[in-house]
Length: 171
Image (cartoon, rainbow, N blue to C red; front, side, top):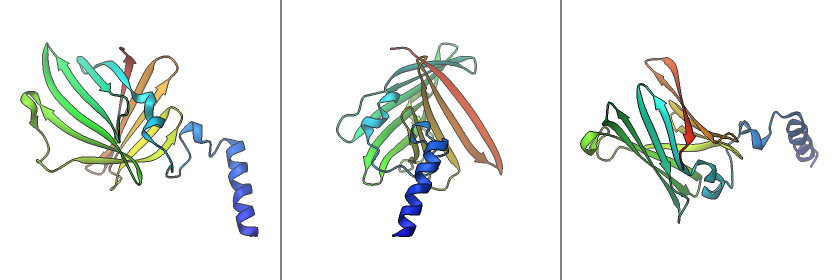
């Protein structure tokens, strides 16, 4: 009983200090009870100037047990690559699934291969998804200015890399 009370006091103190503020998206704990409705800040059409072209990401509102997303990158008037994304509600929480395609819808990954990013942190306007092997992480963060940041962090050849895509709401 004493240990339980001590844990509650610690959580309250951390929350008051801002160290474990769920609305900051920096709790350091795997979120429980998060549903697709909590991820509604991602929905909409987003555009970004990127790498000499235009990136466009569209997320549908949640329907049933999923949210669907698409991404396309257009440069010099031609579609260069695409992504098909799905956030599914699972018993363990939302999971973002992703596949890449070249022009002509030629898949990058093998037919059965899908990248599955599990929700590992959540705040009112931030969601952090991570591969099980922790080699890649996607952080979606919405701003009151109508912007959406998508931060891709990954390890390749023992080097940490990060790339941020700053989208503006197009619709």
